[in-house]
View 1 (cartoon, rainbow, N blue to C red):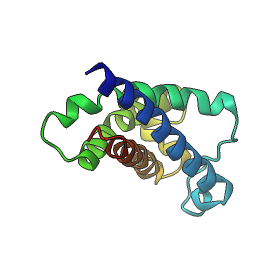
View 2 (tube, helix red, strand yellow):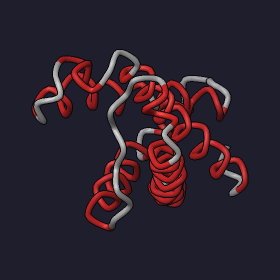
View 3 (cartoon, rainbow, N blue to C red):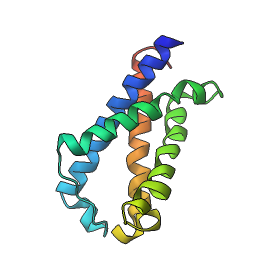
Length: 133
């Protein structure tokens, strides 16, 4: 169990790295601006570090959700709802970005859900590759 939790922690961090880089790239290529979302983060350690930490911590939930009988990828996608809820209902409102982050654009909730789905998918693929599916 300790090995599986350690792998889930690592997979959560790598999944967060993948999702964060794709989110950053979407901002840099004006894809987010094209859909009316005014989020365009600058790639820096101070921006990336909390995402890696939170991705790791949320990743610890993988073995618990996986026990419910979900497939590995479905486990990652179901688990991705948790950071989405935290981001949309806690982090964004506290940061002054409005309920669901809507002051950043009408598609902000969809962007948050999609970014976290990428995190969940990447985490699941790493768990599968490591033999911890």
